[in-house]
Structure formats: C-alpha cells, structure tokens
Length: 328
Image 1: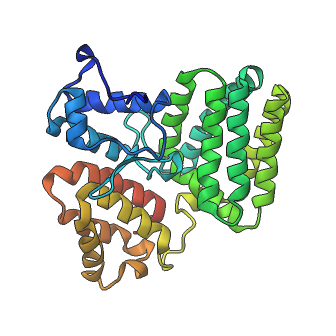
Image 2: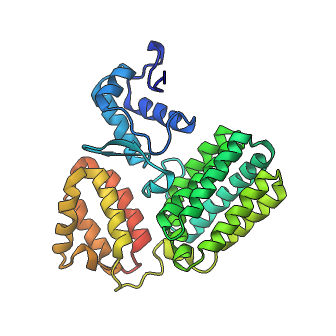
C-alpha cells in the first residue's frame, strides 16, 4: 500500500498557509514529491492538514507566485519542472537585472556545482548512477527540441546534486536557479538554435562519464568547459534584453513571459487585458517594441486591483530590465 506524503500525524498538522507552503516545498526537496506530480485538491489538502480551505488556498498562491506549482482550474495543481518555472523574484536573493548580477549568480552556481560534482564522483550509489544515465538519455533524445533539452539539462544537474548526498546543496541550487532561470533558459535555446546541440551533449556526456568512473578531476574539467561554452559571445546581454533593437517587435518570448506571469497573477482575465492594453497604444501584443514597453506595462498596471500592485511592480521591473531600453 502506498502511503500519501500528506498523511500527517495530528501533531504535524499545520494551519497557516505559509507553513503549509514550506511543508510542500520540503516534500519536494526530500523527493517525496517530484516535478510532474499533481497535488490533491484544495479540499483534500485542507482535510489532511487539519485546516481550512482558505489556508490551503493561501499556500497554493504562495507556491504559484514562487514558480513551484502551476494551479489552473480544471487541471489541478501541478509541480513544475525547474526549467518550466517562470522568471520570478527570489525574496532572499533578489532579481537579476544586469549582466554583472547574472555573472555573480553564475559564479555562485559554479561554486556550488564544483562541490556537488566532486562529491557525486566520490559518493554516487548505483541507483544514483542509473538515474544520471537515465536523464542523460533524455537529453540525447531531446535533439531538435530545445525546451525538452532545457528540462533534461536542469534535471541532470539536480540529479548530480542529489547524488552528492547533501540535501542542503540541492536546496541552495534551487534557490540560485530561480533568479537566473530565464538566463539559463535563453542561453540553452540560443546555443541549440546555433546548431551546437552536439557540442552541448558531448560535454554533458563527458561530465557524467567522469562521475561514473569516480574521476572527480575529469568531471570538474568537463564542467569548466560547459561554463565557458555558455558564456561565449553576448548571450547574457541577449538573455537580459540589452541587445534588442528599439523598434524590433518584442516577439514570442515576451508574449509568453507576460501571459504566463499575468495569468498567475489575475487568472483568465489576463487573456483579455493583454490585447486590450496593447490596443489602447495602437498595437497588438505581437507588434509591441522595446520603446513601447514602459507605457504598455503602466497601462496594464492601471487595470490591476490594488492587492496585486506590489507583485505587478516586481514583475514589471523584471520585464523592463529584460526586454526594454534605456529610452523606453
């Protein structure tokens, strides 16, 4: 009989939404929940936590705002893959709005992964090794599908972290990933679009092969090559929107970014508000340019309820940094 991770003893029951959100995140970090799992209904969670539906609703809102879950009517509440989590502000670490900040985050991520890679080479169990090979195979199968590659790439790095045997490092990597998720996502898409899938895959294959051979030095050398590859050229500037021409349409990346985040914020009304705000400026969402962005975001903001203004301001600042111009 499978025991649900939500079957709690009476003394473990929580009543506050924030505590419930922390508990669900803990289940995810411990591997009792995995990306792709669907949570029980809000009513079922309320019964299992011994609290009210409103407290559970608050917890789901917190997790949704953090990009941990995707809650949609009729679909339930889905635990997101790390790569699917939309760009968001990490309340502890802040947001990435410049190339300098992105480099600082990547440098910190590199320090953390130096530890996890070296420890995985020393400590990975046979089960860990099989999991690394399984995710590497998913990466190989993703040829021609950048989004699947991004998901497999992140899954592989978190599998390495778990193989290191230190759950705190897994949590730290999750925290570091949140502010730079859009940067890593863009870089992977860009490199694959340039026809460099083979190069990327071979580096990851070298990395995993070295871990399986217990060759920590070889694994770290492969990781160094990987970091050098993703920093070639102006990928960080492009990922942050700095290099976008002022009069070029913002394109599908902006539209998807805005739609995803605004839907999380206000629900289905986003589908109405997004084109209406563009129309008031003489545009469709597809024809907006970086020069129009500040006015467009202000127009959207004026239509939002007072209780959403703080979250909208944080999101608006990120969108301006990523897609706008100094003159915008």
